[in-house]
Length: 110
Image 1: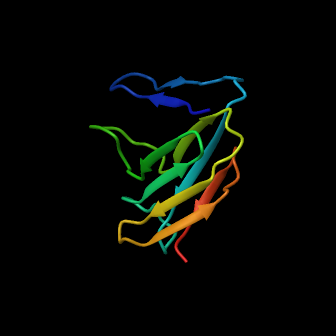
Image 2: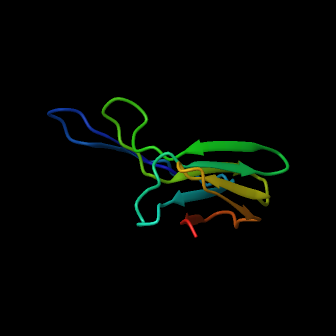
């Protein structure tokens, strides 16, 4: 589950914990460049028989925000993901068939 930390000027940070036991499945994808740094601009598509989801590696989502450079996809009660399609900002692509669920995948260019 994903947690959130909020900060405000002159106040202590606030941690919002997401503690759930839903039994839902998930997959995380961390895409890096050839130096091991986050591959900013890389796009990830997760495909299963029930759904298709997209994400893009970005360091921020809005003004004065910061996000982890890892994409998280909830897949509910689906027991598998058919494939993960990765496209780096330079146009290089990679397809991973049957990636394992309920874990983080570190993807680097070949």
